Amino acid sequence: MKTNIIYLLFLFLNFGYAQKINKTIALPDIKTCEEPISLNDPNEREFNRINGKIIRLSYSTLYSYTFSGYDSLQRDNLRFEIAKISQQIVTKVLPQVKLLNDSIFLRKTYNEIMFNTVPIKQYKRYRTAKNLIIEDNSDYQLFIESLFSVGIGKNMNSISFFVFDLKKGKIVYFDRMHYNCDIRDLKALEKVLTYGLLKIKEKY
Image (cartoon, rainbow, N blue to C red; front, top):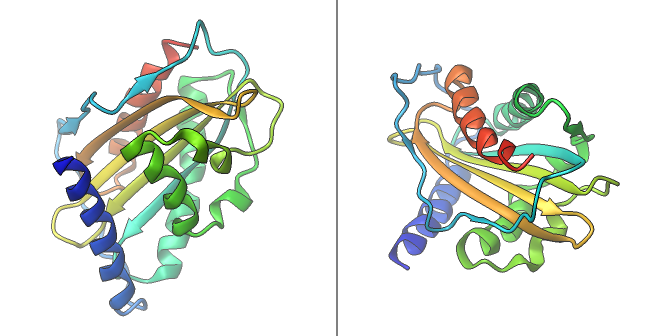
């Protein structure tokens, strides 16, 4: 319970902070991450309800949100850039995955995403899963969420993996991990995403 409260405070305090700062300030220079990457992969909230193997998997997108007081246009551009890069990483690890058009999804506000992912992550209220799904004829669909801070103390990143059963319209797999690093260090991002995707590949 304490962890939940701290997590929610991190979300809302940083979100409020980001709204108050001058949004015309450019993002700071990229900081290269230290090696090896310090990855925290707690298992108390992850779950796996996939029966058998994943067949016919599609990938919607990686939706990233920057907790930062910097230029909002830069942050939006970064979201689209990271989503595009994630497609390359996902298809590298899961070559049979079907990529979907994520342009509409990426234009959603973080409030629209957050009010659907937080109930799943914190309270296992799975009814919001349908709002995170792109209509498709696949059996399962992968969605990734990334929350990170830039220029606010340490660069804290949270990566969450969601797999939805499209026939039942509910989530069947969830995994979340954290690492302290600049999300714009793409080599580090690839390593973390690959780690999470390989766990899913065991079911694919």
